[in-house]
Length: 629
Image 1: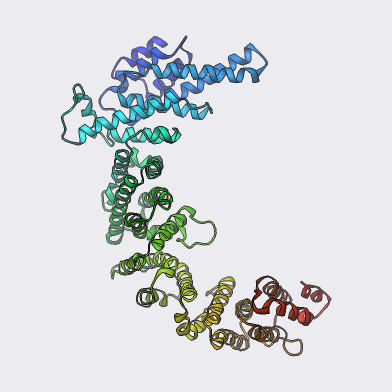
Image 2: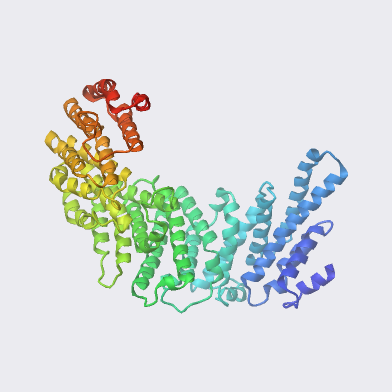
């Protein structure tokens, strides 16, 4: 059987399936005595794997054979140790020592092989080492790094019109594209599996800038430079199937380069993200103009989501390192490039609920966007305003569908909310307010609706002059959106509480009381809609901790008591169920005890007031106990 294997390995073709060769090679590498070095040398130079054209399937089979051989050898050594002695713990260490010696012999057999072949074999070995939890062997890591460096060096001569080194010409021809993937891409795919398992110090020995350029070019090729929506349907390439590990390797390499050589890292990161932005821009353009919608087939949506994941994975790694680099125009440019790239994919992001989706949602997306916005905001110099202006103008197109436009606006609003503190009043009035106004009372598209309200509240929190102009309008807006389908109870309470607090902090007590008074009037007028009335009552209660000064606090507590209980134990609003009443009293107790601040005697006053009046909120023994919360 061993001779048959050697015979097949010595020929450029075989009638046997690759899976059979792979399994047989793994078996004999593990069982060959005393050491596997000769067979490893035969395999790495085998005409069967080297024959034209070299394909990922062949090198995958070779890599997997070495990986499985390590598994088999580990099992053999464990069984041998168990048969020699029952003291398994004593021999456990010996097993790993013997396995390390066997791995050393295996790697020695690879010496002299072609770089791409050595890379495939050593990748299989290091994956096997990781599988069996063997302490990483430095010589295996060295082999992976050196073989990849040699492959990259060969590709350099093939890419640029430089004289070829002696003896390299024929081999370099193998790097021309053959079939659906070229050898450089195969090398990068193999490396994406092994390099993340190698120590960072050894990875830094690689020419990381060149590696990142090659990775970016390969990723761009996988996505057809962003034109896959307008191109004829094609079967998925091996590169596309490996986009996740390729993107992970790119993110790792960017992080290492930025940490070790920030100046070079920033330039390389900018180039990578610019390429990704161009890809995303092409995709958006084709999406807007294609006659056939991507929903008609699963493949485009899968690629669109894959592009989003790849962009986020790389951008998150870059931005996580950039925040530790002293701010420059390049760091800001990197953040802006990331945001523009993602804005082109807003229609894809919408499929995940958008940036502001409640719950954990797409955590990596949120982290990436907020990191980029933090960098832009920290830089100053009007970068935030230029970003808002450019995004605002990129939203509209008469041929766009309403869904597409809303997805774009939702992305812009989510970004604008975080930039409000660094935007001027002029920018807010010129660029931000027009984005919000038309969505404040249109709850049919929840993300733009909720984001518009969030932006308005952010504006009010950061601009006192705006508060004075906005109070009448936004008070009525909140009241109008308190019905079914509008803001939910939590959102309405938060909005009223924030709004009243901002109005009170403007220094005009009448301005601060205006929203409260409007709430009270609306509660009295709402007789038939019990759900709306309940939301309004809870909204009024949430304002207790928002008012400022003892006099205003006393005034609102009197109104809350009147609304909930009336002058003779009955509320002035519509009938209230026992459960709703209990919920409202609990909410009032929570506001009083936990949320009212201790400024200017407010806390002392409100605790004393609650002690005096809590019994009036109960009508029976059970409610009396509740009122003592």
